[in-house]
Length: 290
Image 1 (cartoon, rainbow, N blue to C red):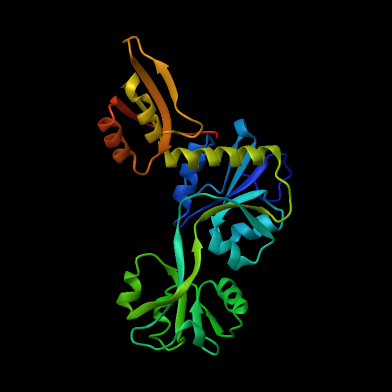
Image 2 (image 1 turned 90 degrees about the vertical axis):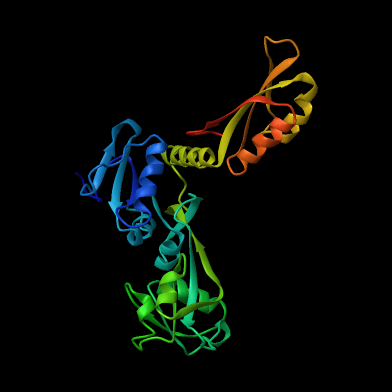
């Protein structure tokens, strides 16, 4: 165990200790080659091999710690960063924890985004909503709630709400409907203190996490193909800088290896087969550097 004010040369990284981001954040860090806690009660974990200390904190507090320079970098949500108004900035989107922030009103209400001035808006993200309204010249009264925002209208403390919307089923049960444009598209992000250059260890962290993101988006495809179909199949699966093409022991046949987007790779296999490729194999990628 340590404490956040400890003097150390290790890179200090904040990780969500609970909530929707916690499990995926730790899984991504493990995939990037870093130790992670197995006991949810641990507040600090030291990864000696990588010269890193991980601090497990409330997701809403992470941007504040990083913005104050207490910790070097941290994983939090884009919505939480913007709501905090901390002196921190996004340096990498991590591709998980995606949510949309929307306005909702009672079903049948005629309130729209053009008529929010003077309205009571209940939200758990007052900083985020205030910035949205100020940017559009609207002045509404914000009612800050820590949870169960969808009950605010029924209980008479708000006219509309602004909240994270996933499926919208919770809003429907509360007799509410979404209206207006998306306030914010949020996801998990890596943040640093605004204007501070990354150390070499922090840059390595970014490279590793970027490699995990690439690995989740791509697969490696291998196939055999006769010489007369090499050009056609290579055009179907060109890879990043072009496929690797090697002659096989069987005269007139070649082995092709290429990296392609994970999405749609089944359809690509079908197309390659029809174009003359055989022995088509798809391999998952655990990490990459591009």
